Length: 570
DNA sequence: CTGGGGAAGGGGCCC
DNA sequence: TGGGCCCCTTCCCCA
Image (cartoon, rainbow, N blue to C red; front, side):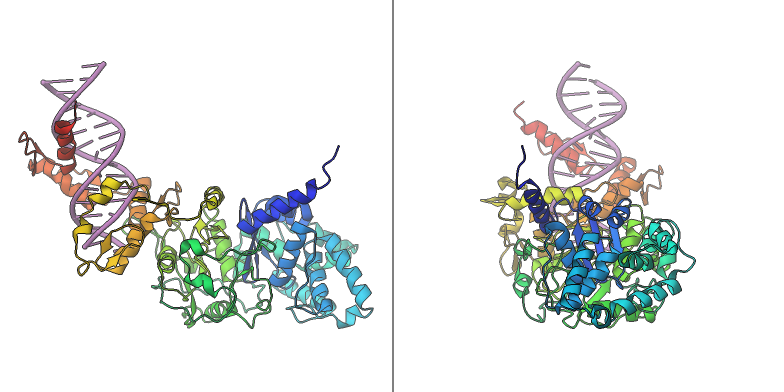
């Protein structure tokens, strides 16, 4: 007995899950693009992947061996068994595919490509120029090898693996020759241990030297400008979307996020399949330049690397704001991956401490939110950066490395993401019922004093409820209370908050930070207000008086609970 | 044992 | 970004 389509259906489901980011537990960084996938699938497809995903949730691939376009094809191939063609000329594409497949130990795919190339052209070796790499397979191989040697000589350890051993034995296939020259393994292993060896030392992006310090870590996340200058095309509509109207990528190529409209000159930008979350060239370059001009801030007007200064509380022992400059764990690839990996090497595995933010905004709430989010929620030991894509909803916010692809919301853990994904059965990300929203009850709404304010004094009205505010910032702050997903997670317990201040305050309780001390008794408090309240114990002041019985209280809240006693039926 | 008050912790939210 | 205030809740003490 056998279900004929079982495997196919299973793969289909998995691919759909990949499209949604559901249960994805690994991120593959290719040059400037992120791809999400399932470890099991990758491990099943390649021994190389298997070794990579064994210990890491983030995989950096050697950009000399694979570019985002090719990797997207490969990922699609892994999940579907089908090789989708690109705009690239066939030979170039297959050549690049062969290189990448060899590198990734996807032997079936490599064989397929070889066969295809042989069929297409007998002179493949002389003609083929690597896609996006601009070299022939042969020269690519050689140059890569030399590059690797220059960069990593003497640093092979840890995962340095069977490939190099086999290479030394001279029994490698073409595929395997590539692999041995990959820096991936080195970086991979180093990233878990002493990734500094991968960081300042070399960049697979080919930029010179020290990218590790290329970020302007002192820069705080700026407020997001309004109105994107949409470059064009595919996803401009999503720029106008509220959080729930984020573009939903097609499921057949689930490889992450679209960056259409930017980086058009990039080698992958002309792909018809808008799935990469691609750090655009501009962004990437700005980083590179920045790294080259260490300490200088990039001048990209449109996109920028922003610091997610997430030391939760400076007063409370938050790390120095510029600590990132001295971060020890340089990562091999570009700044994003470096930072990602660095964060992965940190205390809270899934942190995405850096990202590139594009200052392209629609000026709507979601944009602001992302901006705010970017400046918030962070590990207590790392600065966070978020890559913000033009025309795309907020993606990975700080620690929220796990991003729901359909809506673009980020989550600090895969569990939370998975829980969130299930909510997509709901039409709306807002809990919006008649007269009830966001867990608030009607009574509270009706008692909302704000409603009595005139429209003149409070012109900024919430689109969800009837509350209105004096300024847009407060309105934005308020509107977050309607969101299903709270943007500010606690890095310790994962609890989510609508406001950073609340999260920061919450973090104090984790760490026992009580900056406010009573001069009388030495008792310490997490909040000034508590100290003020407490001081009444010493002064004997009881400013809160029950109008019914005359009872006096030091705390208003105790008066309130006392009043309940009066009013309760019992 | 129970209920009330005192004191405090923590979250929500507006300013 | 932090302060301030509101709310809910808990813990402890005591009558």
